[in-house]
Amino acid sequence: MRVMIAEDSVLLREGLVRLLESCGEEVVAAVADAEALLTAVAADRPDIVVADVRMPPTFTDEGLHAALTIRKKWPEVAVLVLSQYVEERYAADLLSRPAGRIGYLLKDRVADVTEFLDALRRVAAGGTVLDPEVVSQLLVRHRSDPLERLTTRETQVLALMAEGRSNSGIATVLSISQSAVAKHVNSIFTKLDIALADNDHRRVLAVLQFIQSS
Image 1 (spheres, one colour):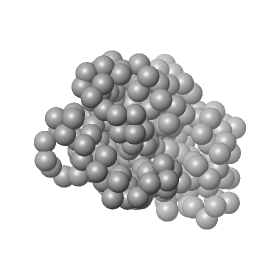
Image 2 (spheres, one colour):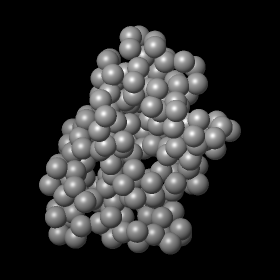
Image 3 (cartoon, rainbow, N blue to C red):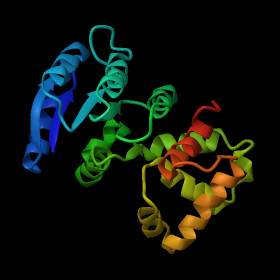
Image 4 (cartoon, rainbow, N blue to C red):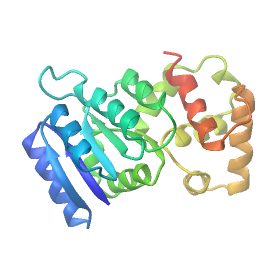
């Protein structure tokens, strides 16, 4: 997997480079700001970009805008955005784009190497990953119609869907069968009034319903 990193902190940037290279991944560029990231992607398309939300010069949302630009101009390039804190608007902005190859994680998640690499590889493979802490805060805050229609188990399934888990992954976490997961997922779609369409797209729409209700 060919990876580009955009992170203004030298320590974290170099740490990510060493971590990924030690795990057999190829880091093709490591830059400190959004402008340099866009230049690097334009010159040599990677499989995935790992970018901080806040980067120079204003340290607000340069990294997010760079990520959205990459998804628009080069949709084949996956993007995993890292953030210091839970910022719901950024998660919503990312997920409102075409489904797949998008991830949003808190920086603390990098400390769990196995979890971070799993998220990175799922996003690179075309999946969508949302940090469990973001999911948890959103579900607690936005338990209002139509989300109140969901059962406790359906809410658990929706939370795991938001993390980017497949049906088999959800089944493993909840210790239930894949067929049971499929029934819960279909019930969620029905209760949230999500019309029949591409299944992956419907999953993203379900997640967006509680993100965008903020």
